[in-house]
Length: 227
Image 1 (cartoon, rainbow, N blue to C red):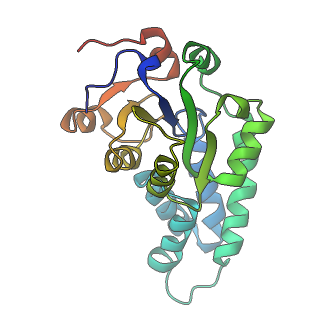
Image 2 (cartoon, rainbow, N blue to C red):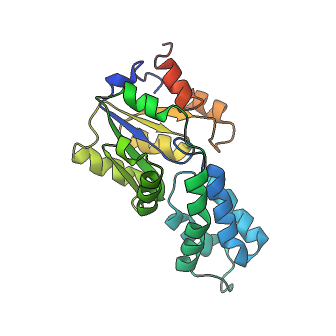
Image 3 (cartoon, helix red, strand yellow):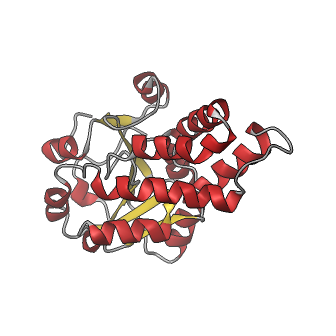
């Protein structure tokens, strides 16, 4: 898997995760999960936050369903799935509009003019499109911005079938789930570590032969890497 192309311009398609790659929003979302679940108590809220971190990249719909089915005690009183989702969205929206954007993203776009760019995220698709439009970034993702409720594997498979993702393609992510989604569709994978919540990521990357960089800026600065 380490044999990614040394020149990003040689890829027909770049697929980006959002949280922890394009936006410094991982901690924003972890806190939003905790706050949304607090009506069920601090222990349950922390358990959901821990579950979220351990399953980065998976949609909020699946995480809250898991929370209600496996973490919360049966017949416990508290918000419904719909209300949890609403509380989460309220808590996370302002954070997505104010968190840091990856440095160098526009410069990288300028250096890859013939490469199609997409976002494939576990975040809510409507929310993602609104955030990137408000932050004046939507236009650089000419291949589209996609998210949940569809899973990443489903989105990638669909966009490959429609040729919106054309090979060779590189998935740039920050989670184990991103690597899994890329591998299942035979996309090359690059791990960005600076904003990732993966514990012991160096060991994990070494064990799985994954090439890693710190952030978008370091990708821009190197553009090539040693074989």
